Image 1 (cartoon, one colour):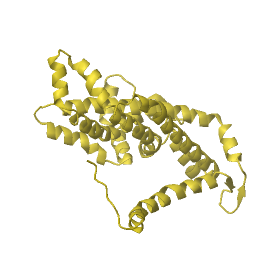
Image 2: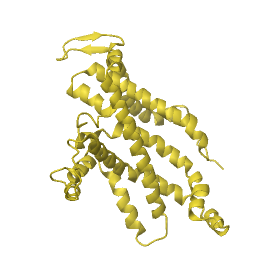
Image 3: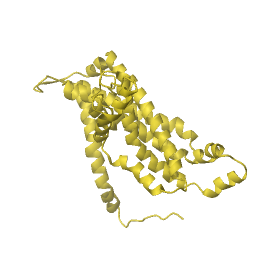
Image 4: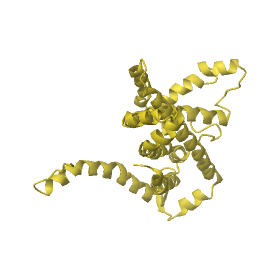
Length: 293
């Protein structure tokens, strides 16, 4: 039976909601409103004069081929990171759910990367794969593989994908493990008694029952790739070489902070926000239909 809290007056519920509303207003709606307003303005290089230019920043942005190149880079990067982090974390969660020795230590090691900041994760991977200093890079070179993410765009993309995937595996692992432990063991045992093998039990029982968790993580991972990977890219490749790893969120920083184009950068952030909202809406509209609650 569901327990409901009943308040004596109308003021207390609003007072309890007030801190969360204030945080959302200050840290989301106010900056988003500033970005939308800034996208209609052009400032000089010194910030001394401002001109209202309507949609000129948007038209200039959408006429540049390098912006569409960043869109393609973001699509490839987000697809690789989301697929790899979800599949690897699900595999690791299945192994952790088994009754084996050392499971506690295994879970602890897998959870630690979640506490590492994205920029620190990028630096750690850069140390390992730096062409002249990294131990793994030196091992690859000794095997005859000319590894150099400083000059080769494909190598740089591989490096940021590995770092971003490693950073997100811990988060996905925790939710998948909780989802696996909530599945009644009696259902799986009954299927095993009926002759269903491990693969058939996974695809017909376990994976459908994990679909709400998978759908939630899919939405979270898309948002993570679009926004929270900025620190990893900045620490490892800084968008290079030749903008091979410049995603949309890094281009917002590069054009606004380094290029001094505040209006164009604000227009990019507005378009990026609309894209993420649109992708999330599409996932809820079409992907959620296949989720079994």
